Length: 629
Image 1 (cartoon, rainbow, N blue to C red):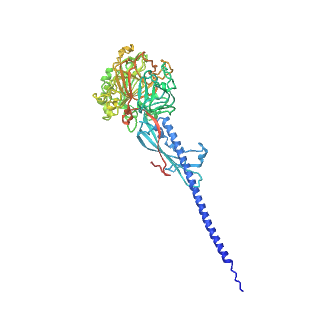
Image 2: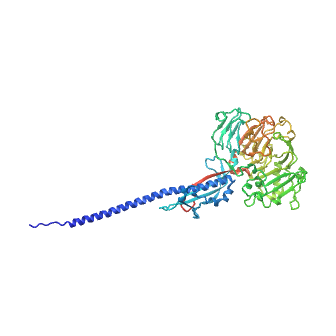
Image 3: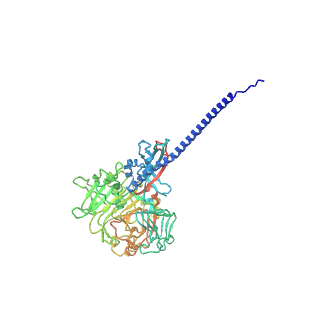
């Protein structure tokens, strides 16, 4: 029998082929898995790194913002920021800050420059601030954009982190505060007071209404230091740390340990805002300090001094106006509108014919609104008869609209909005400034009128209560009826004299000076004499006595529509407050915050601004660009 054996080679070859195919597909699958794993790893690396790089870009932006905000607040305004833009662009994080920053490469997204940021001007903004700044607004405030691109050094992935921030350097008129004190703010022993606006102190706040009175705040109250009710003026009816004893209600709450609110002036010499500046060769008008001085902002500057060779007073009047964005103080033509008059009497000031100044003739001009012969006694100061530079506001108003020298200097309908007055006469008597007949102020197309002086200022009678002598703003909150104009007074100190005031009675007992009711509609920026202790003879008088009095106001009412700002200690009117009964009796105070100051177009001319840097907008742009959301 013939046996046939099957060959094993064919199945063996088939198996080998099958193994090869399986290995091939296994390798392909493995390669795919490995490729996917690698891709996922790179994607994860990219995502992780992008988050890190975005954080690094944000850190760079914040570093530049911090320096910009510091310069804005400490150096006095946006001008310093404008001058330092190039330096902000270099403020990338470095290994000096932390060694980890050596792993990152920063660049300007627009220019591509390395170790650099983008910092540029966006525009100006006038409008409301974010919600946390209730009822406050920025006025003509610059916005700057800061942006950064950043990559990681020696990275496996090409990814760029980005960040962009818009910074609003908000100029917030200080009159948007109902009460603002640069030092200790004392309500201690105040009469009943209802405060309908923000309150801030760059120091501590002493709450506590007087016996039978109440103190109510309807808006936020903030202090840089503490809130308590310590003894003041020899009165200690409150437990300092127990708010339930303060007779005080905070309907919007209060916070302590807040940041200092800086003003666009030297915070170490806030009185400088009303002082006569050094010559322009020492302090240029358009320097940071020069730009906030009321002397440079005023269109009319009136300075009274001793005559060079003795005799009657010397009067120097300068009219100046702004050109090409500069302040009036930088007016290159003001020398042709400067009148230097020696040995002046009230009659001479009233009747002087206009003589245009020349190099040999200083010129004369009729000033019927000015009187230099009045004297009276301020019994708080106790300095005898004072030398008075007296301004009749009603006559000033007429003079500004009819005097040919004035109308020839200023555009029709835009008369001077700021008058700067300084009495620098040096004798044994104190020199002061007084405003009379101020019921109707210069209208100036609704721009209003401000008076500034480095002297103690006295205001006699109703102030800013009508624009047409037909309708009046006489009651509390009445300025909203349109019968007043935006107005402010900036001075070393402020004393209110009623319509009944008589200079001849100023040296007698206060009971001989019976006051009459009046209304005062203007913001106040002035000084006080701070408390030096807790006794009756060491008290500042508190916010309710920031406006000083010299009469017996018993039974009379003083209506104040105002914003109260105390920026400094009085330099000239430096006598300490005394409790009622020494030289005055207080009025019934109808005090209210003038809420028209919440409107940008109702700001008094020359009002200083608080400097508030705000992170205004945040965005993540594409690499290599700066854009807005």
